[in-house]
Amino acid sequence: MSMRTSAAARAGQYAALLGYLVFLAFPFLWLVSTAFKPARELGSLHPTWIPDQPTLDNFRKAFDEQPLLQAAANSLVAAVCAALIAVVVATPLAYVMARRRSRLSTAATGWVVISQAFPLVLLIIPLFLILKNLRLINTLWGLIMVYVVWALPFALWMLAGYVRAVPVELEEAASVDGAGRVRTLVSVTAPLLAPGIVATALFAFITAWNELFFALVLLKTPEKQTLPVVLTHFIGAEGAADLGPLAAAAFLATLPSLVIFAVIQRRITGGMLAGAVKS
Image 1 (cartoon, rainbow, N blue to C red):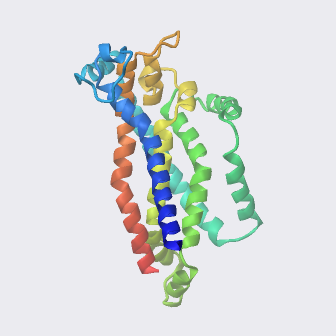
Image 2 (cartoon, one colour; image 1 turned 90 degrees about the vertical axis):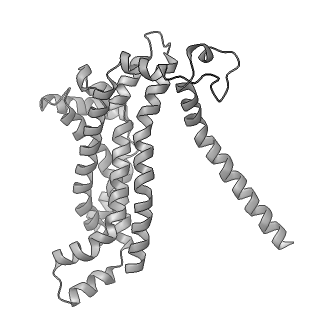
Image 3 (cartoon, rainbow, N blue to C red; image 1 turned 60 degrees about the vertical axis):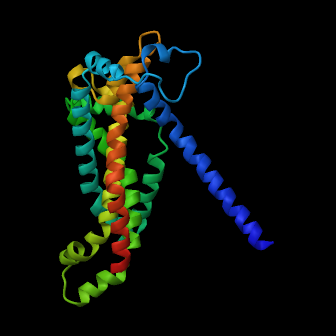
């Protein structure tokens, strides 16, 4: 009886997991299907998953109507710079938070948690005024600063967890062997933190790449707008969307995040396993 119960529970878990995967994959699959459908199929009363006559006209129209390449370049610059700066700033701070237990580190952890609860609407006016005084409105660097500030709390929380997972005994052993503090951090701690640093940078990159609200408020010049902002241009003043080109452009905007995660995911897992062996 227990074996049958265990098998039924496992089958239920797999069924729930399969249902969750279908739930996650449905919007993306429908987006891909819509991107390749001709105009007459988009207006059909009986939509189908697979287009009867796949076409690339939606992609051509999307590039003709909006400056997608320039917007993608702006998003890439903002996302890469924000991810790099956030990781460089967060790594030493996270190490101190994890290793130096004090009231200050406890307060910092509390700030990390509380900061994630603030609605964006409450932050945009103070941020706008600060950036206006710094003359950074309608600039990519102003947007990058906002992305760094927004990603930093969660980056600290993530990296602090990775630091706590590194045994202190490894650093103590290196110190006993005569390694200095800097040598210990570079040779012992940093390699074990590499998967966490990569994961944190990936999180910051995807957050900045997909962000719309700050970019919509802070960037006014069409040449400086990011990809999510340009995607809103496919929606008319009355809310009517040019569905085919919008789906094609959204599909292209989604690809970088999927490709980067697919490439880096194996390295993250491999780095975790290597760190476990070293420890």
